[in-house]
Amino acid sequence: MQIMHVGRIAHSANRTIPDAPIAPSAVRAAGQMWTDAQGMQPNDMPRALELAEIPGVIAEFAQATRNAMAAGFDGVELHAASGYLPNQFLSSSANRRTDAYGGSIENRIRFVVETLNAMIAAAGSSGKVGMKVSPGMKFNDINDEDPLPTFIALAKAIGPKKLAYLHVMRTGIGSETTLRAAYSGAFLVGGGFKKAEANQAIEEKRADAIVFGSTYLANPDLVKRFKNDSPLNAPDQATFYTPGAKGYTDYPALV
Image 1 (cartoon, helix red, strand yellow):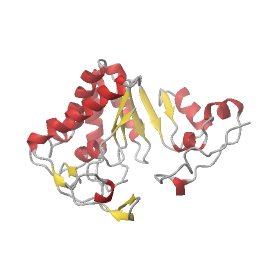
Image 2: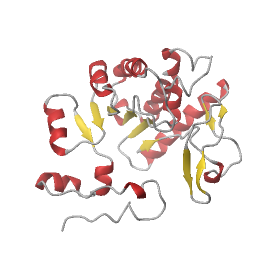
Image 3: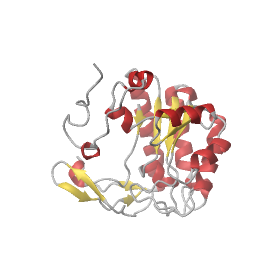
Image 4: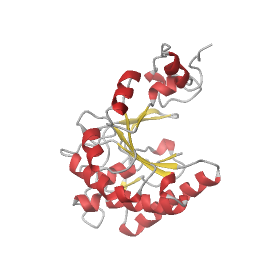
């Protein structure tokens, strides 16, 4: 079960409370998001978390972990990618704090490290907790000039925890190669892989496993298709993040 917190990527039309969304800093994310009631709308202006509030937010990740385990999941994944709250703390563009959670690389990785610690305690084992990151990905207005040093420091900090895995998204800056060298645990890579390229990456030990996202969404029987070298359905991006069954449950399976 992937556990996430949107942070500043929010709009009041999608929320059940009147409060402003929270973020490391009061920096509005450029861009728009989909709302069922009002269509595309700009992201709301967030408020900066008070220092005393941060432990409570981390505790929510721990409670979500307990809920997932109680529901029967084998493990949980901290979503620290794609411009959402943990990624916002990692980002020098979104995180402009001057306290223990901002400024230096050591401080900007603190929220993620502490959240992982809380999730591990809640799950009962570090082997039941993984994490996803996307160094250099600009989605949701993450615009760091030099993101790799931050993620190298994070990889080294979490290595001794022996997580289930670290999942790195390919974003065109060579992060998967750099972090493979910096991280000592199980290493997963995702981002537009085809079958042959995925097999090659594993054979060359550039990854322990390959993650398929939209390809799996469009091919619910992907394992069978790979096994038989069958043609693949193409993902319909126009249906991503939209309401209704179309694009979620209507892709055809092999007969």
